[in-house]
Image (cartoon, rainbow, N blue to C red; front, top):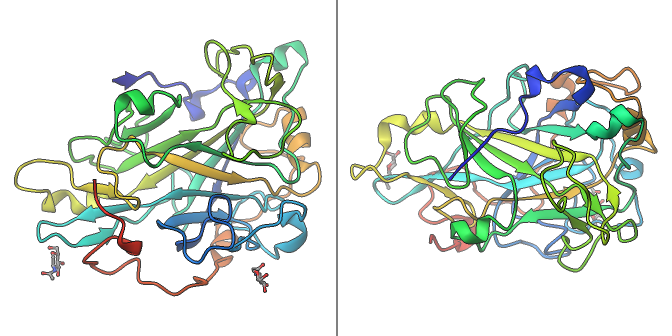
Length: 332
Ligand SMILES: *[C@@H]1O[C@H](CO)[C@@H](O)[C@H](O)[C@H]1NC(C)=O
Ligand SMILES: *[C@@H]1O[C@H](CO)[C@@H](O)[C@H](O)[C@H]1NC(C)=O
């Protein structure tokens, strides 16, 4: 199934204003303070970006903005943590090699990481803006156990773009591209945009948020009565430099990439979010309908963001030619 493109970030007119910024890699390791708090280590590897208060456990009553001393994001008041799983290349001899992430258009000097978007609603035309996430807010979208299209369709807009060049923004699929992509694979993670207005988190880290009852955030679909509060559209683009392996594809033509949780289909795509903006900086940015640049926010250079790195809390080789996926995750 081909999903139509919803956002053409660089072409969006100012009425569809959005924050678009770069966050470099903070650390790559097997930790997950949302799904496996206190557990060293979590089952699969993640790339984490954002504030350096990321930890094995993260107490929701403490704001990352009060604990972190730096952030990898170019908006300097954003100490949130954002993470996804990472990709491995499976070589013909059966070993696995991590596929590096690379910076997006305009953010080429970023050390891996992601591009993060927060989009205020189109209802801005009516003078009504979104309610920003608040201290203690967390959520997850997607499910790493999914391996079928029917399952993946339960989540809207978790997709892959086969980059013909760095500006390709069409023909998103729910599954991994089946051919080598000349400029890499972009993973697109769009979160639900309706909130129950009460719970900052929920046992499954999902049921406190919902999708619009019809349509999408971008075409201003209404929120369900159970989740009436409209949130910004949080959206990650993660670009994996899969083109580095173009000459080493399997002889049978099958696609050789596998998520760090063992998925070769792509249907298990998922992402995690722990809110950590300082004070009401994000709400201000949404209220002023900032577009890309935001005078209301403090910024820092990509080079400064690149310097804010964490070392792994539990040392593990995630980068060599590995005989199995880290944590022994089975492939399939
Ligand atoms: C992580 O948590 C441990 C244990 O609570 C604490 O000692 C350490 O300072 C924390 N690290 C960061 C970066 O917050
Ligand atoms: C497996 O293949 C990769 C890619 O060709 C190569 O770099 C690596 O050294 C090989 N490992 C073994 C154990 O043969």
